[in-house]
Length: 147
Image (cartoon, rainbow, N blue to C red; front, side, top):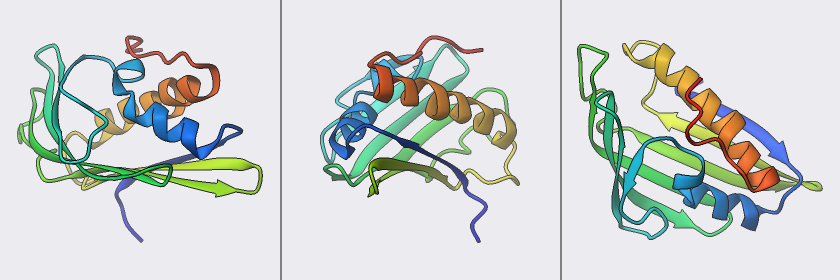
């Protein structure tokens, strides 16, 4: 059993809608995003104030099935090991189950033993379970609500 952070939910929308929403990162994740977030092999940067910086490379982009971002560089100002995210993978798996679409989010390498786990898990919970889910189901995410 893996200790990687994982979040799963089901929606009524199609796998195509879920896939499109994941790749439209600016609509559901707060911060400044530079670069293309929807093309295989692209690298893009996420920056939130002076708190969080990460550079992701899109290493898998299987339409309506899976998206994987490999974190090639990172900086978190609130932990001792500033580059804890570097080398981790952010994975979105999409699967049709009966009349629903199941999304499984895994941040592989974000485990309880690392310093940012609690804060990062809480933030991901908001962005995946609230902002991304709302974007999928209503067309409106909450990318700037950092509560």
